[in-house]
Length: 418
Ligand code: PLP
Image (cartoon, rainbow, N blue to C red; front, side):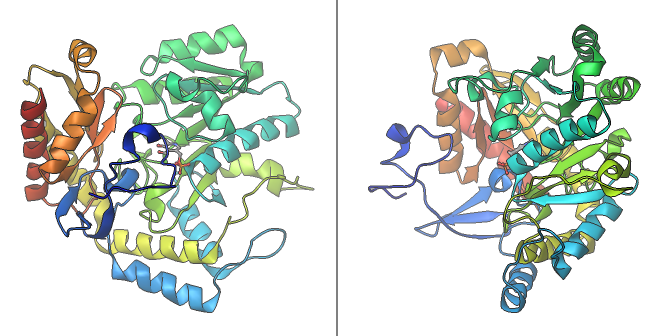
């Protein structure tokens, strides 16, 4: 623990509450992080759902150091390029479940959301349908904190208090394909650009799709020629099994957003994989400029971190390992299903799961979720407080014994607090 006069404004935090009671993470290795006193904590959240290969991997550190010495940074604007960015784009294009994918690199997930939203609208304008501007998303969904992402957010509290946001957005029920169809009928497909969809809703409470839902919405989008944008910022790079987090549903989206696990968080990187059929409007014939791109797009050192991370994932067969982890992780959390404060345990699709507390428990104890989070931390396990839920998403290198520890710490924390 550390206290003192912080000047650092913490995202999403009530600074009045946390400013004098901060928890300093000092170092990390594997699935463990340590506080300043050297006490270890199991990082059952992989940072913010990103540290898929675990902390402290020398292979990534070495790749980054070597790249910094050779070419620290240089932009890929206009005709400039660099080898790590080219290699990364080639590799991701080959792994993406879409024909002839082109890769637009950004600095993170929110960047990628806004890139895709602008690209979708410009695509339709370029195809002579400038009226296709409306963007559909799901309730409970999270798409980052940039302008478009804030506008389409399905978590109401993240959209409120900012004045007028993008008007042409509609949120549909998160697990009912008929509601998507009804919204399209109401709006007219000729006014809709894209449907943004997290295959498993993450920050909105870990909500796996109901069986058949994702297949149904993909079909509806295809029928209406609405661009299907998979937000796999959490789901990619093993978290939901495949490289891009959509493979198990046989999706072939028009765009896939990625970030987080692409570097396991060692350096900030995001991007958009764009299906060749969409990209060709810009890349073929006389082409068209896409006047958009963050300064650090294609940063060579960040790309080197991603390449080393992808190497580790392949060498250690972490996608197969992730498949093997999803049931044990879910089962570890199911242990608390019968606790009287627990409404629901969600999981079983990917290496992420959550325990939701009952509404009446939260009404009587509004700070129950942060208190359980703290109690678990006091027992040596870091879980994530998320609205009414506590979520877990450990590194893909976690062992069965460590999964067991996550379940038991959460169970003990619930008993201690509620
Ligand atoms: N999309 C999803 C599904 C996310 O979970 C997140 C972040 O958690 C984002 C977008 C935004 O990513 P970033 O925080 O890197 O901007």
